[in-house]
Length: 446
Image 1 (cartoon, rainbow, N blue to C red):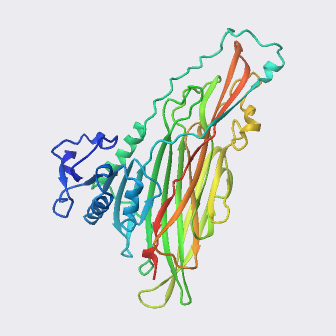
Image 2 (cartoon, rainbow, N blue to C red):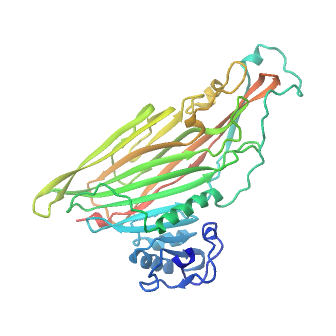
Image 3 (cartoon, helix red, strand yellow):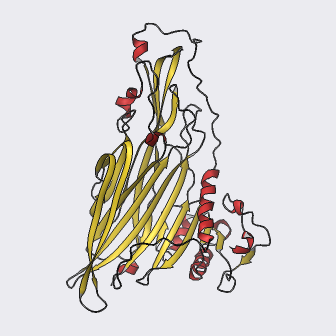
């Protein structure tokens, strides 16, 4: 039973959408974790709302030292501050839940894997536009309000808001169960050679949201998922030392289930996704920089290190991007220390210029052109960002993220069978999040 595999730190466990899914009872083991009490345990669980931040930090250390994944419920800003120095990577903001695990890499340093379940995102506003269709412009006066409607435009009731979307909690629980499963093999990375100081952390953050306008939302919540594989390297030569930071990104934004996808109304699809990461270092390289339907590129870094047998050797880091997505384009929006890109749909409308080009989505009769699979579903792309510092950094350094995305809905207003008198567009402007993190540079110093 799963209850036999979970250890609850402290005496209290408050209601939470993730722990609720485990149906933990009063007989689950509780107390202060140590090597003996965690024997046979597969998950250490701590409710940060019911314990002091310092206690949570100690419990986390005990769990990771014992080789167990640790699940923190509702870690606050105070909790995250107490965890500095305990974890090599931390989120920048409080989250609904944090799953942490650790392993040793060949250089002897710890690699951390951190999954964050975020609170639901809220839009910062919305815009809409309306115009007569080309067919209506040539047909004369508008028809009566009760004219026949050519297709059924179903208006779904507004979704109730919750601090965490239930579907997001379900997906997060899958990550927890995977971490608990001893049969699940850890991900294998291209290990640098012995003698090169480095770390490889993985940070995943997921945030739910809902596209909606005039009480007509997509019935299933959308999700923005960011996974950063974070490499830190110490570059050593006979003359000087420097550090490299590389972030391999996977960015996925799904609009959720479309409430309609007919010639009358296409529901909300993704118009564009854009974002940057900013590190306190000098920009070195970023990919992708451009593309139409396909986005590719490679970042290569020759890294010098002290050989255990004497002298200095070179190891080459290489990270590549190779995505193919129909009806989407990409351009770099990097500036200074901020590295990133914008991806936008090109059909049926120019997602980077909706205000001017939204009516391109309609036919002569005012019917809505098809949304492509990419623009009505998930945008799933990759990136590689790299920075260098010629002065050695130590302690916690912040990598800020600035990501935004926009949903667009196209629909027609009927005036007679098969003809739409007015063409309409609504776009949410827009969701914006910071999926950044802090990372400890202390391990990659001489």
